Length: 367
Picture 1 (cartoon, rainbow, N blue to C red):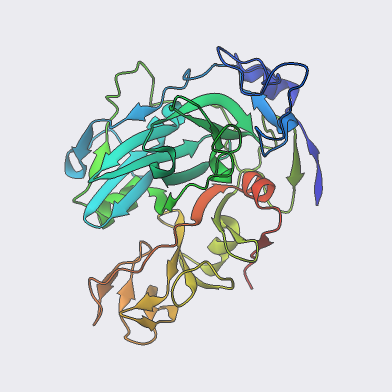
Picture 2 (picture 1 turned 90 degrees about the vertical axis):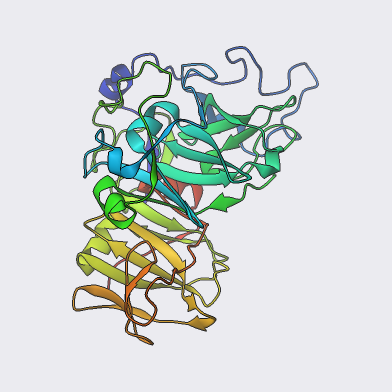
């Protein structure tokens, strides 16, 4: 199931400017203690040998802060099939195109009193939103360091700490072990998002930086069966490395739901999640192949746990017969307008990364 994988020569050569190197002396700051009596035990809670410098230094990938937004109906720079990261908090609905996140990875975003960080790591395909409250509302930046090939953020406090995105906690520095609160996001096609949320805001391409947002910057890296990764890692080969997976974290280690397995359910699918995510009434997975997305929800509606199934090509609940979309909104029936509560500790990433960070998680396979 697991063996060592390293980048091929062709892949390493294709990544111009990315150099395999340790990270103890790194582009203007040292993240590990120096000196003869130095110890990493009280500085990093992750193994130093699993941290690499990606080549470009700190902020070479520039995080954004409160970028310009446009109304969805005015957007003409996105194709229906490209992916966006969608955030919905109460009446606030915002989409962040991956074509921008590939080049910036972090968007520090203030929303009605909330200080958020919308993050996407292109190397692990992971999209997660965080509350910046645990770092005193400080902004996050891109350190240029990678842990298990995953983005390591740093906080812009006087005493900086380092935060691997998929660890969801501080890993090096004074805030090591501090947990980040997750906000649920959905990664889906722009066409599906626009249809579900015609009245929403969208991050523009006008970021103030000279980037060609029309081009994916990593060649064929994201192709399903591309076996290459940037830095050495033990790989779980039960699924294609770059397969997108909905990872759901729970008290038993979590479950990974590969999109290839979910697709075996048909264009739409429902899976009862077997594990305690903290969601009231338990959790259920909704799948929509056309939207290229899946999400986990609490089954509770008006204080009552509901069961869901695909009937007649639609997701319906057994109790009321109402129809539901993949974003957890009832679109027809007695419960029309009701919204299921999304599970915050659920996000999409590449399979190899989910398996590396959640090695005890179960792998779901369609029956």
